[in-house]
Amino acid sequence: MGLSIKQSEFAAEEFERFAAKVRTDLAALRRLLDRPDFGEGESSIGAEVEFYIVNPDLYVQPINTEIAARVKDPQLTVELNRFNLEYNLTPQAFSGTPFARTEQELLAATRRINQHAKPLEGELVPIGILPTLRQSDMGAEVMTDLPRYHALSSALLKQRGEPFSIHIGGNDVIDLTADDVYMEGATTSFQLHWRVPANRFADYFNAVQLVTPIALALASNSPSLFGHHLWDETRIALFKQSIDSRSPHHKTWRHPPRVYYGNGWVRSAWELFAASASLYPPILPVLSEEDPMAMIDHGQVPELAELRLHQGTTWPWNRAIYDHADGGHLRIEIRSMPAGPTAVDMCANGLFVIGAALAILDDIQHLTSILPFHYTEHNFYRAAKYGIGAEIIWPHKDQVQLQDTPLLNVARALLPRAREALQRTAVDDTEINRLLGIIEGRIETTLSGARWQRYMTQSLLRSLGPSEAFRSMLALYMANQKQNTPLHEWTLSP
Image 1 (spheres, helix red, strand yellow):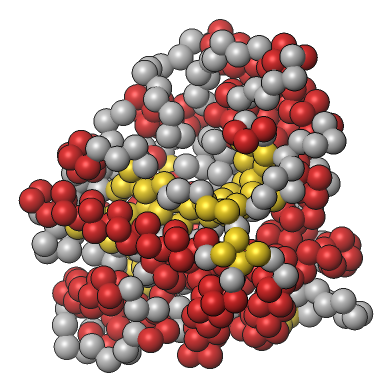
Image 2 (cartoon, rainbow, N blue to C red; image 1 turned 90 degrees about the horizontal axis):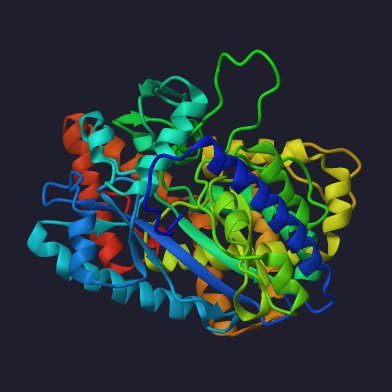
């Protein structure tokens, strides 16, 4: 979605040609995946971090294009709304201290961007949903004025045929409608890319799917929207509903939402690309000149631009990524974790989800055979709603009957296994112990970013009105965040 699109309206013929090219790309991808050596290479990680921009009063500051113009960094991109930016971190080999390198790059980039933002009265905040966000801050006028966002919004609205409807329960309930996709811009995330062996992609992907609910609960950092106390990860519900292009009045078959957890345990990488092509109509039909079949015939690796673009307009919480770089390879994009609270916390989340997936990798075919897929989807939404207080359905190697289990118990049991699995990789023990120690700290203190925000806001509400309580909590959050102090060490007293 970061590519340059110069138009926002497309003819029916362009959609038809694009869909045909996607089918050609799918056939080409199948040929690539059949190559015995395809996707061989060292494991690596990459990450993207989305930010809010706030003004000195800690309300949103819609100046992303102005900041980007000053910074002039190709790794910094503007996001859907004018108060959001995204930083794309340099890929790192999964050896030595990959997350320490990522952490230091992120801290340096944040400092540099803030230096340019300060004269514009702006400052970056990594947080799932900004606690001080107001309904008056939202609207079509807040969207970044780029053709790709206009095209995206126009296509999704056209498919839906009416405004988007958002209903989220919780301690409060929120019901609202939006006449554009701008509500999606209220959600910011930490997206992790993990290069995995192409010949075992399905096992790795299924392992990530199984452990994602645990990682999400421990990382949760989005407990409110517009002053309403909602899910621990309100962002999950908001993102899904804010761009749901399905017509509520469609009387026959309709495709699943474009934001989804999955359609079942995966048997191959190819089926993930094929399913997105068959289930979701194109919305950005931008065509390339590439002939992928001819390139494969000549032993080259095609970009598969149309397939990649189409894949980028579906938003599963874990997404298969094809990349033609480095001889062609596959990655898993782990998309569900929120931005924040700190750089080191985000890195700990990243190492934990990889370690947890590696811990169950050798058992994954057994585990997926005894746990129907819809239960792991159930786990995901329980984790999003209840965070570290969730109960989930978790399979065990020797379990006869599935049953509810406290998520924290599963996390506690999985953590040492994740440590052991990571120790069999090329990652340094110092990195493993430092970052998994942060996860252990959260488990033992039963504290997540969402829980910290709730505790602090409730405490402040004893002496302050709601808007001032949220603003004071955010000020404390930002003070801790700037120190890069791990969340579990933050004080719970205002």
